[in-house]
Length: 160
Image (cartoon, rainbow, N blue to C red):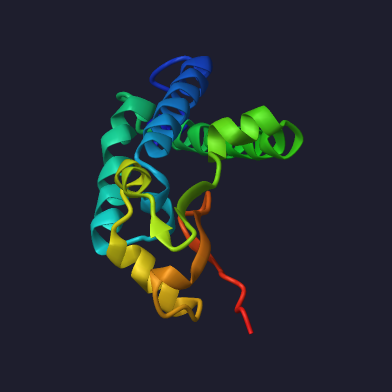
């Protein structure tokens, strides 16, 4: 019971570890692409669980105290709040953290090199077409991969 609040390392090391792990994992998530963020599959859930377990030791080291865990939780929540606050006030930070929408089709034609780079399949685009009431890609003026991983379809104007 006496180990409940005894930290195994200085308090500032918990904060430093949390900041480093947060920044590195955020970078890894950003590099994995928009599709991974917008379309969660069972594989993605497994990856999230394993990722949490993988960074646990980097965060806690040998500490198992209640205080250490609470300090880390508070630090991570504080960092997350701070990043959210910054992204709403600075366009450059927002672009760095959240990314930019990407054009994936124009005038009825898919941009294949962009689809490959963003790891979006033609089947993903077909599903978005159906969800948004378009029958085929030739009916599309623009298709945009949004920062949240969803695909927005702008249909061509009908020529009546």
